[in-house]
Image 1 (cartoon, rainbow, N blue to C red):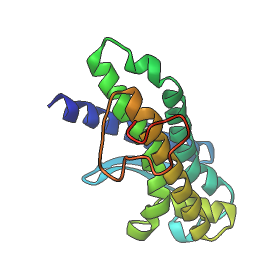
Image 2: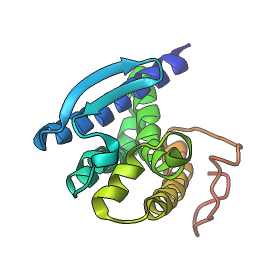
Image 3: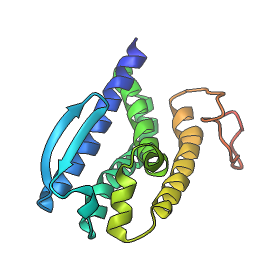
Length: 180
């Protein structure tokens, strides 16, 4: 039950930070209209309809949360040993899940999201004036790199042993055993 609670809290924190940064960036450009809690999650509403969106501000509004969450995840990965050594189990478990979600969800969202629901990748592509496939490819590469970072650095630091192919290292670095 504790694992589900900490995972749930980590998901809520991630969603709050991500959507809050969308709202903050949109406010800076006068595009913030509202914030709703929907059955599928949190949603920030913007003033400009999707079909009329253009300009670099959409890359900022759509992309800033993705960059910020991944960078926060990298900071927590860098602090993983200290966090993992914490005597406070709930804090340690929450930090583990939060870090894992921070480094994986937004890159996955950027790479797969456009196939399912549109999402941030469209806004980034419009804002940068590039094909959405470019944003998806960058998101996928980042997801694969971060997946490897999770498998080789985060999970071992927290003593997590996983055999599932999605969290086993794909690249074996010298000096590291394949099982760690």
